[in-house]
Image: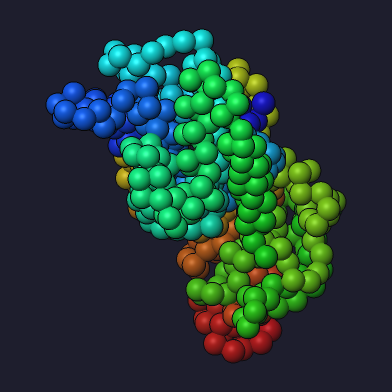
Length: 243
Length: 243
């Protein structure tokens, strides 16, 4: 119950911040429109909408990490978190309270992304439901990264790391815009060590109804989600009571 | 009279710095107890330990019979804290901030709404109740922050520098409110202001560099220091004089 009450507060904090809303919902749509327009005006098919959409959906999740980092670090540095830590709320209440609204926003963000893409020629099939579930699950990787940054870093550093570094890493190393094999070498190897490209490949495979291609990406995404979200819980519990 | 707070040899040491030297103290139920000292005296450290935000390096404490190290959830349901910083949710309205605190503490929706109305009237927050926390002036933010602690009807209330940044009228209003709680609620108050301590506190503990220099009523402290005024007594203790 307490986590539900606190989740309501986190939802209001995020949704009432117009900059967050712009980057979380509007910016990915603009990006999709822009790249689709470029694609229509160049002779070579650079960004096929069916390939581009899963990439944009995953890239958009990086903004969820920014929301998580910003909300938690603000609460921490303003002593609001300290106040709440002297109430009967437990660590689980906090983690759920921060995560549930952000996961819901991520889910809505993915739906909006697919709907926007539909008007640009993206093929909608029933497989989209599996892709949405997969994106929702993967959103916990980004929420976890955001919570870790929010609990360990100052607001400026947390926002910088998630807002600039993570979004760029996701953009470049997820294969959202271009085929990573075009660059290949160490760049591609690093990309495949990180989870981002695996989420994109997994969603693309699901949308293409190619279940055999979902592996090993599915396993890697599960392992990353468990590890990163587990670390977020660990750091939250450890850091909230000062030694 | 039973003791609300019992502290035995409580200390806090960081790597090279001792923030609080072993301190033994008891505060009877219903008493308004002041922690007085210059910056770095250990006032906030003691409050953080007693509210479960900071682990002590040694010693024990009991809050209304509950062990600080073993029964933090029981303690958190009977205390409330108004931190030194104005710890409010910036994007929630005044009403929402109060409602959230009441709901987290387990008040039903109906009870919480009634309590919120009461606090809004008591702190003259009516003109701002629909305004977001971040748009309030510093003084109103502090009032809101204090009302967020009082709404919980705690048995023990920790007020860390409650009148910092308040104008003289607001300070006087808050003093009246705090005085009304005397007897029914145990209050631990930290302050820099000597006149505030004299006006409000039943007993005062003077801290300096983490050491308890003296404890007693205003008259007892004047007697112990062999000075003629409380100001001289305070200066005596914080400049090296012993009781």
